[in-house]
Amino acid sequence: MFSKEFSDIAFGMSRCLARLGALPGKLVWDREGAIASQGRPTEAFLAFCGQLTLGWVILDAGDCQAKGALERSHRFLHGNFEAGRRFANPLDFQAQLDGWSDRINARVHRTTRVVVAERLAEEHALMRALPAAMPDTERRCVMRVPAQPYLRFDRNDYSLDPRLVGRRVELRVSQTEIVAVALDTGELACRHQRAFAGGLALTDPIHQGALDQLRGERRRSRDVDVQLRPLARYDQLIPA
Image (tube, rainbow, N blue to C red; front, side, top):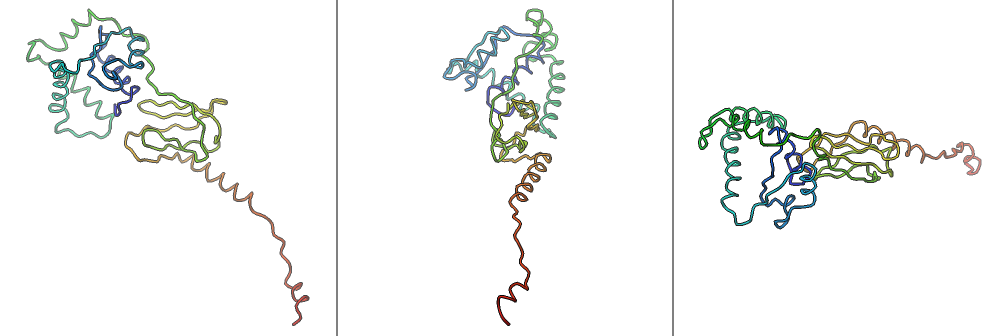
């Protein structure tokens, strides 16, 4: 995940639970703004836990031991996985991380002296099964296609179908795609791969072609036929 918006964090939690293969009793979180504002769970986080019937533990600001336990796993990941590796893209990063985690979990844990994967199998017997469907983590909103047919999301501009200017569309944002659909007819207004870099303008060639066609039609509609008088008429008016 590449942002601190709750929808992206919820996607990450859903994927972690799917990798875990079962539902724990509680989720343990530090004081992340989208999770716990001023130490109290946010409504979005409570809704996510409610859909999965999960409890939660929000760490106290002064609980250095508990916060350190979470941060040690981050340092272990950074020093043992990220160091010395190269990644082609986010999907390659995730694939390498999943493979590395499977290898690490097959080792004997230095503190507990048991194989992590075997201990996890024992824990599965105490946990509930995953639901048939995980909570929907897509971001949704309704907007009107502006005269300049682009939408701004997360510091980037994405093109929209210029033929839908002035009409309302539903915007759906997932971790991989940005999709907009006209509310009245279901026409596709855009489908873009989501970009996590900032300051980009992404234009669909189909949208650019439609925009050029509309601009050409407008220019032609402004053309006015002007009567051209023969030069002989002026010769008659102005004696040589």
